[in-house]
Length: 123
Image (tube, rainbow, N blue to C red; front, side):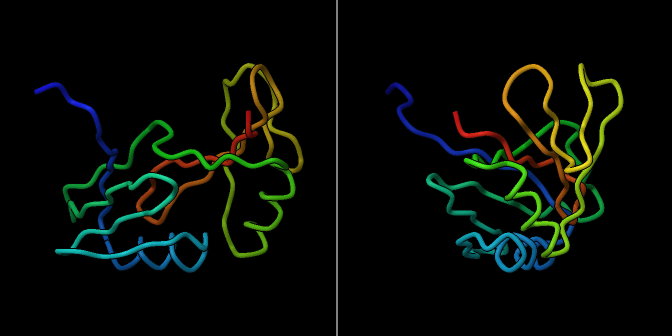
């Protein structure tokens, strides 16, 4: 039987903290089942517990498309989200925390478990 559907997932060290961040701070539709968190973002993303064995992803695990990256960053910063500046990227992250180098505009931040997320220009 060929595979015709799937979903992505990543780990966190603390599911209740992740639920608060994704549900309350980011305002996403979330649900919990069997100690795991589901993010409903057009497709489902599984956020599963690993406790002390969790190691934050060093790559972007989830991207949030936005028509206006700078305005979305400003709104999330007002909600307490801290954005990142990465050295060594082919360009500079500006004072708005938006990277305007090659490719779409993008701004990176992390969840409470240290996983990398982004707000990225809708293509």
